Image (cartoon, rainbow, N blue to C red):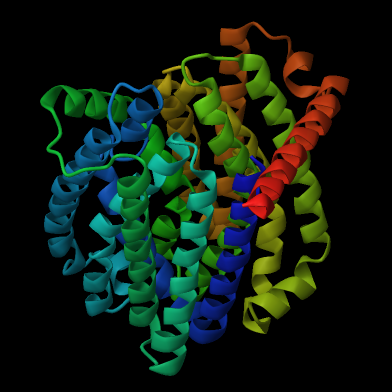
Length: 434
């Protein structure tokens, strides 16, 4: 978990640098155009690739499929689903839908390349935590972000390619991630070219279809407001909300890090008490860090994103309760995936997404851009409440056992920290001796 958390913090710092560069180089209008292209390119492929991510990962963790079988199945699903998505996307780009007027047509064409690239990049990335290769995942992820940053400087700032350069730099970062992950899996985990068996592909697709609504909803929920704003708002408004939401989503690093470490330890074993403890610790840590940031949000936004993004500060405060609920729900979703109940995640995400879809159009005429923040927060809270109620029903835990911190939580943290320190010290001693 410590390795995963350090990785996530490093990625958060890198993401913050990327957001700052995009804000200063593209300004709110260009940032809005980049946001709609990013959402379009990354989400459309996800719709047509069930099982490529969590499905392949689950069967490697449970040892029902080899790494070669899982990666080859994920590649086949990514290529077939991504190709279908591209074929359906082309006529949409040239249609009269207002969303596709928020960026140049050729930029949307470039974003089509993101469809198969981002899906397969995420698929091979999911294999590393399944095999508990957290350190390698951290290194490769940082190299992906570094590639993005360097190419942003070259293409956007140096060559002046604007939104096109930003899209190309993102694609290049994911290509680097694919190459590094495949190399590591080949060198250390037995990856070899292998056509997926029909039985394994069926299992992976079956699990993926049951989790598919949750997978889509997870990705869409954090971007659905950008999609809807693409139909009714200006580019500047889209840019303000996209920048605010990306800043707040950075506070999910703790939940994601703990979830990555927790999943392989409880898959097939359940251990609800460990999931509940992780949920409490994640909630406390996320709230503490977020409150510190919000207290300094006005000067920080002006420094990090520039004065042009100052109107985004009130959006941060509205989004904060939703991000807290999102972080808490992330641990519960990890538990339901581990105990082979992915449909629970799908129902929860569908509930939150439905609330967002209904509320944003209703509130926008009166609240303007703030409607997107309120709709996002309410949807995330509804999802969290649903998962907490279901977790209590399945495990039989009392409410206080789920939420109230225990003395054992502090003991757990202390002992885990000591164990990690001893392991690190032993590793250093062995390295020194060699």
